[in-house]
Image (cartoon, rainbow, N blue to C red; front, top):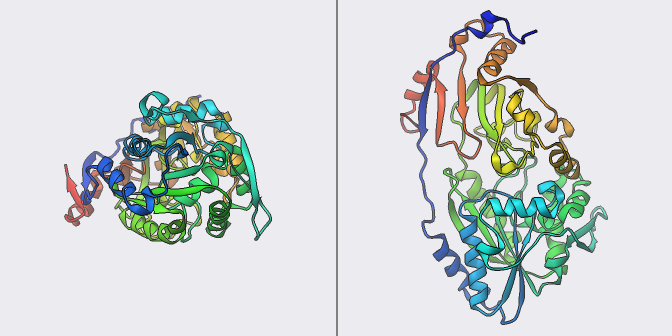
Amino acid sequence: MPILLPKDLNIDLPEMIKVRQNYVNDLIEDVEGKVKEQIAQDKISSMIKPGQKVCVAVGSRCIDRINVIVKTVIDELKARGAEPFIVTAMGSHGGGTPEGCLQIAADFGITEETMGVPIKADMDVVHLGNLASNDLPIYWDKNAYEADMTVLINRVKPHTEFCGDIESGICKIAAIGLGRHVGCSSLHEANTANFDKILPETAQLIFDKANVGFAIALVENAFDKVKVLEALTKDEILTREPELLKISRASMPSIGVADIDVLVMEEIGKDISGFGMDTNIVGRIPAKANAPGIPKIGRLIVLRLSELSHGNACGIGLADLTTKEVYDNIDFVSTYANSIACGGSIGAWTEFIPLVMTDEKEAIIVAIKQLGIQDPLKTRIVKIKNTLKLTEIEVSDNLREYIESKPERFTIL
């Protein structure tokens, strides 16, 4: 029995037009030079000693030119006589396995061959202590702990589940990334809704008891290009990260259409966001529903998983409909390991499988029927690649007047 009747499959859908969103591309052209400049500061360079074993912590997000940034940090450490190595600071990502973490790093161009240093991905941790507020045990990567100094590299941006002065960034990679699977799971027992308080407290405990030297903090612009790159000492992180978060929030792109019947998202993935899609762009959870720039969305469709997600479909439950291609490519072990380790305030429904359709057209037609739209040609449809790449989008022709009324924001291609 078919899902739709032949008459449904033959309905006419609106024509789509391509649109460019007009953002300022204020990127740092020479990130290699910027890294060298930042490390050359006396407050940073004075920490680096000949013969020092230095752990460079690298996370699981697809950050602009991350391979260049990491390689430059490595080279600058070597140039000053240190002996650096990389640790994959990925919490429970990659299925919580060394092999999975190494594959994620390789996807970003970070291998022992390209970086010229060892990469350590084992899951061994040490117990640093317990939080004063709730007695949660805090664990930290053993390789990092046994080094003479640890360097943290991460992008600062709004988190997908909670709001606070510190969200995703340096404190998060220190607390969760370097906590490995065990530490990630332990910290998430506190409920993600409390992370606005838990993350700073955990970071302070780590800064007090471990060997963090400095961090390379990054902020990306609306084109997903690095616009801010700063080296921060351990003592500067908790003060400066909230300021960088404000810059990041102001720099984020948005979909730009306030009222959407059907949002078609070509891909989701862990390399894109913790939930596969950024809830700071699409909402879909209570904590982000009323945030500025979040559109009203009737139905959300996901067409595929990103290649770099390696089957991790965390966040697929935020969609209303998906495709058989997505379902067939889900790695349930990786997805569920990540979901269960992270726990969170939202619940397991973020990994529930939405309605699975044969293809994009069938999914759109079902969405229209669910919404009760009588004239399909009046359906307001927006199509995006993912929640990172929003410079060029597609909108249904019935939105042309809206687009043309905002020439400072949109250009029809």
